[in-house]
Length: 107
Image 1 (spheres, rainbow, N blue to C red):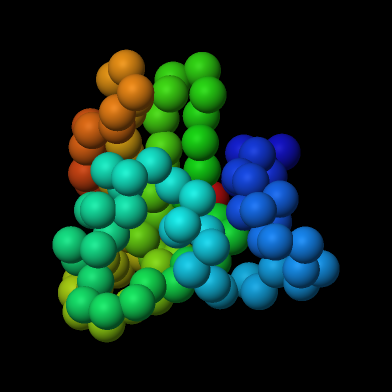
Image 2: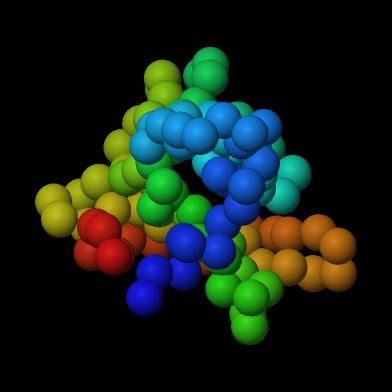
C-alpha cells in the first residue's frame, strides 16, 4: 500500500482527466511551509512526480523525497544510492522542518 495515494493532486486538477506524472500540482497542494522550502532550494519553477510527497496522518508528517523533484538549482540530493529526504511535522495549523537526512532512494 502506498501512502501517496492519499494526496489530493488529481482531485484538484480542475476536471482534467489526465494527471501528468511530472507536474507542479504535486507541489501546489502542499502546506505553505513545504512550498516555501521548495521555492528556497529551486531556482525557478519546480515540478514533481507522484511519489514526491507522502502524508502520514497519524504523525501529522509530510515526507518529501527530493529524488522525485525536478527544478533548476536543486543541487546535490544524492550520495551513491542514498537520497535526501526532509520531513515536515504539523504543529497546530503550521508545519515545520523536523528532519533532513539521507535514506535509500525510492520507497
